[in-house]
Image 1 (cartoon, rainbow, N blue to C red):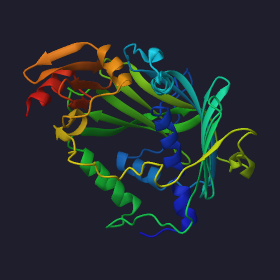
Image 2 (cartoon, one colour):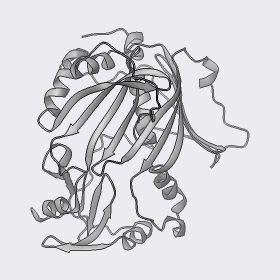
Image 3 (cartoon, rainbow, N blue to C red):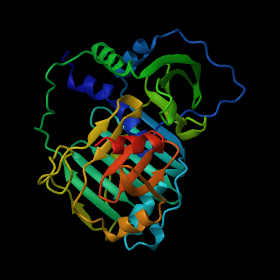
Image 4 (cartoon, one colour):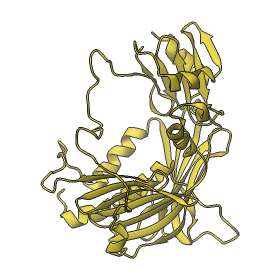
Length: 356
């Protein structure tokens, strides 16, 4: 199915919102008070997801609050030479954060992570892209090629066809249901629930809330197997009025050095491994899959070595290594350089490592 450029841009707005939530962690529902749930026309999961895929709004301004409780161990990043950057990355996975989103179809978007008096922002204004950090007083700039076209898919699908394919693919490992309604940022929402069928997964449920009028996702919760919310981000305010063009205008403050980003300086995400590097192997399927990267001959740098030495030692028939265990993810770095990671218990990781 072919869509016009404007319509296609508008239909991607919900993806931008979801991407902003992923950058903060993952979207979540607000705690509900004593207000009765709204009465909404019933929708099946497939019908709801199809409406999400076809969401068509011209603009949005929203604020999201993100909360994380992954149970990360204390890591010695403050004592590392480059620990500032790593500490910032880890901080995004803990505590509370505020993310603000502005979108104006088809080619204007701004996502800002606000932490007290500091702000980190990604801005697209037509063909201009800016990355800005007020804390570091750093700005990066790129100019998009207006003639560049996205790589076409082999078989274009309508939203309903794509949703059907998605449900068919996850059905063997996931129970997909709708679970009543609720409110997020004062707006009525549907609730979509994804429940892993394998109890070995550390993820008990993922609950996504979808605006009942625009069908833009406004929230979701990732619930760990102990019943706690491991990650949640909630829209606290949302306005579907198209933002002013001034919102997307950016000029670095005087004295700030601007770094130009090029294809060579930015990762493409499609580069092939260099040399004889091999792709990770995957043991299991669905929510309990364990990915194991091959042994590396490169020694970890000082920063990573310091972190690994702070983690508990583990061993088994597979060898020796270090264990990182959180509410949602378990990882083992072996002494021979393999890395195994999955949303499963340590025992599942050990079993996968033993399957040489």
